[in-house]
Length: 150
Image (cartoon, rainbow, N blue to C red):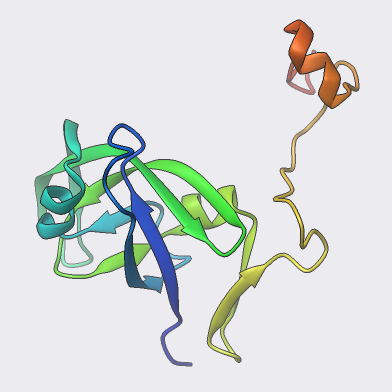
């Protein structure tokens, strides 16, 4: 199997005057986060929130900056995430792909919106205490997630 790449847009929601940056990202379901190079941090004027320790397969580890928030857009999907500053390319991990409800097709070497929910990302939760209508948000009424063991 080969690598799967995706054209995505990255932007800084705290700096709406900055144009989004279009990049080619390696889609990697074995990685969790979004990884971006330093030049994108500077270009998007992202703030360092903290540092995170990262480890590689050979056992080495080091601290890297954790920046954000970053808005990630793929087609009609978007999400907000933090990013680790590492390497010289963009790597799109499982967390942002899951948040946008994207599916990796290794045989076709592409990512696509989940075909079972093509128009809006679908989130899987354990339970809801009640159903809600979109108009209920205007009244400040939102659904509450409850663990299944209660």
